[in-house]
Image (cartoon, rainbow, N blue to C red; front, side, top):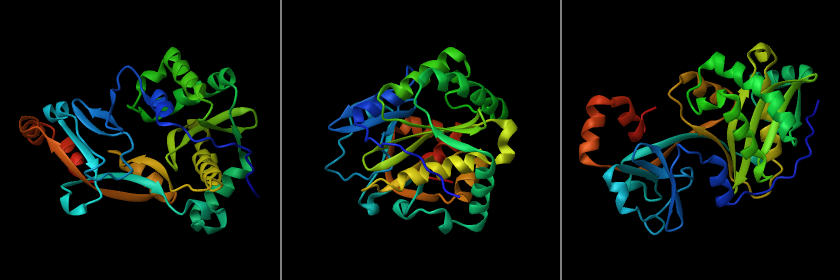
Length: 282
């Protein structure tokens, strides 16, 4: 049993990627060719934090010293923290026959009942996927971008997905009912998994496993790809376990951080978990 998806993968530019991810709550800034994102109030990281930078690449804006910043470095001896995230390695060699027995079993089980399709029509996708997102939100109480639970905000997000024509949008179906979604882009020789959610009523049919399998199959056909970026380490252990069970590797990237001394003191005593996360605690 094979999964066949005809999709033309187009590499995004930095500018297109910024347009896709930015919103009224997110500040992004470019300085000397490096894109920075404000990941917490007055605390900045490179948008492409899964790449590494040396001193010649990075010139931190003076204003960042009012709060703080962190970036991955090539010279590990200068590291004082880590940035932790998940990736899928050996992308070009991916094949269902090479994964673990349990993973293969889940994917094959899902393929008995579900089908993955490439989504190309904005209005149809918006109509079919919104109930899936609401089901996912009600199940998980997902905090990130929770404003999307409002239909108008969700529609705005969907329109941005299709704007450049370079976001790959996967839908997984049980007959004609959409039961899951995964979105991804290809940028700087890396496939970035952006969003993934599934309908609660169909979890027993393993839609997430089939979506991950489809994403990895698509990525395996991209010449020159380095890896698949699967997101930062989560505060929720279950999210991390989910990725590791499906073959993702945890990367602890040596990094350099600076926090304004006053802000550092406040974090240490009042937001210890946030401070530990910056340092790289998992």
